[in-house]
Length: 496
Ligand code: UN1
Image (cartoon, rainbow, N blue to C red; front, side, top):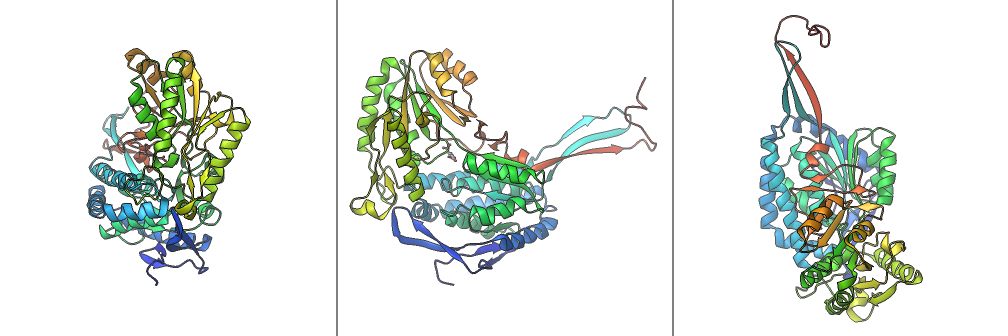
């Protein structure tokens, strides 16, 4: 097998796609750099992976949860040892700057240690029975074989958010990595395998959404699906899964607002806006894509933000001095371009950026300038639709209440931020912002693994990852133990 040829992992064996087809994983900062060839799999490969996971489930579910967790602790340590290599691999396949790629690997390490602790909890409840000499309790059970469909923007962190809680809960997994970033999933799974995860417990099947993703969602032996991606695809996943009543956890888009009030620490708010809007080249579902400015500071803030955005250093994320890496592929560049056109077409003003970079070294990859559009109103598409690129819209408002109203006037509800020194307004915003996450005096990005992660409205379907992921990856069993030695009829024998 050539060094950069990768295979599926099925039942502990590295196998090519049955069709023999492959696809290339390219470096978005330099398309001539091919990171590797990965299998372009189909439903037949999914079927094999599900069968392997089903077989492994018969024994994995019986491994005591603290023992399952020990593997995660070991995987966390292995990830720590390999952090630099895995971060370099990630930057090469996804483009995010090295500091952020290290952060992405760190998030998987944090998740390993956090979730491993769950191995000695997985708490159920005991409760009194209405009958004498009868014991009642609830216990958590694994769901079975679960399908994980993961995105390219957090190529290791998000797969860890899904797979680690699934594994500690006693489930076995089939994961479909995003086709732009499969290597980071390989690295994550390699750490698990090296930590002692038995064959078949974690399987990888690479390939596209229509061939691999749909087959996973529709497979009768897949008991639950966890998906992170766009709202458009998430809706299709949920509809397909509904045919078999399959539980689906969806983590989707955002149009996250940072609100800056007149009394805010402006320099702090500027730092937050730049990091939230242009960190990860705007390719986070938590990215700041709207900045709502109270009239008193709007002009000064806008001028300073534009000045600083223009100075951001764009380039290959492997260069430590670079602040903004490439977008992941041509499709994302086209979306950024399209939204700049839509915004200016609707009367917004392009304040900086707005173009793909094609000169010199930039021509080798897919780069887009940090872009700010001003004079945006809440009805414009640039104020309502997700771009998933380095494009941020500025909207001005008069009163605090108007700011909150504009922040809430969209179909998404993932993250939100308020900059103010006014404690009363901060708490009112915490109560009133329609979002799964609210930051006070901090940017919209930067969630930590041990808090609930997810959103309201079209961002999700009610589930949360992070601290609550275990709720999705376990199911409840109610247990009654009668030690009276006689038939006791609930609702009848204890009646007055
Ligand atoms: C995402 O953008 O899909 O809060 C996840 C953050 C990161 C996770 C982002 N810890 O920005």
